[in-house]
Amino acid sequence: MIGLIREGGGKALPLLVLLLLPVLAGADALTATLEDGTEIARLDVPEGGEWCVLWNHSVKGFPVSDCYENQAGRMVLVHAHLPDFAAGLDHIPGRGRQVSDGQGGYFILDINEPVPGDAYILRPGAGPVNHRLQVGDTIVSLSAVAPHQRVRIALTRTQDR
Image (tube, rainbow, N blue to C red; front, side, top):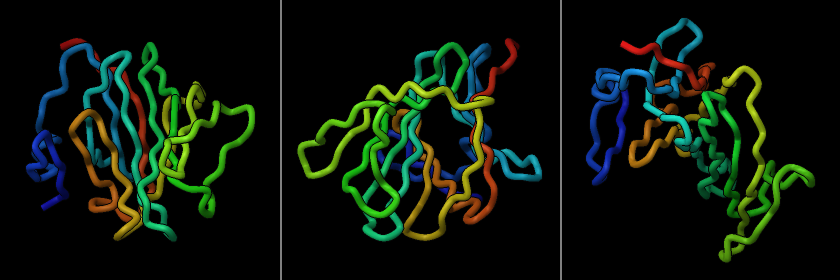
């Protein structure tokens, strides 16, 4: 088995099923690709669509998220959720606005920061860190497929078929 995704009602499916799902003609896609070019995830993200990179803090274990939007084919970081001011987590003044989540953590809203080249490299943590991509109800664990490997996360334009 390559990895698992959770779809809708939480049913676990092999990641291979996700890779075999056709991408809609003319839609944009979020891809995760290994250094050798192997694509490990492809998720449809239409213009205006949002996705998040989720992970569990390596010390405290709580979930953290960075969320992006497809803005006219550009990858733009729009908001984040940080449940605590734990190691490595902080708000940078002038980069979005910090508001309470009402549970001791905070959201950083209105970041609106374009990602250079509409892509970046992530090294998914192993085990409990569990880096994941989430688009709607679909979640792909990058840590299950490629722990500690260079994974290129990119928003790509697909050709009309």
